[in-house]
Length: 79
Image (cartoon, rainbow, N blue to C red; front, top):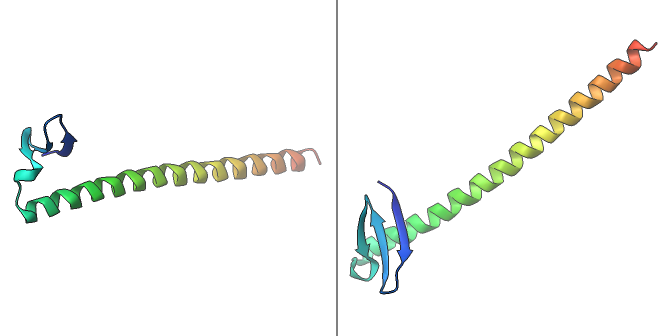
């Protein structure tokens, strides 16, 4: 059920379930759906990228907190 738009030497096509459909042969409503799908794919890619950044940043703070707590435990155990 993958939906993919690609450019061939002849004309742009959209691939649905392994079948290729020339975009210039789609009706206006179908062309609009292809545009929505392309935009949604870009947004999903962007959201995935942002999620990776957020997860990395969160882990950096967890690591920093862990290091600080371990440092404080070491300082307290020396007393």
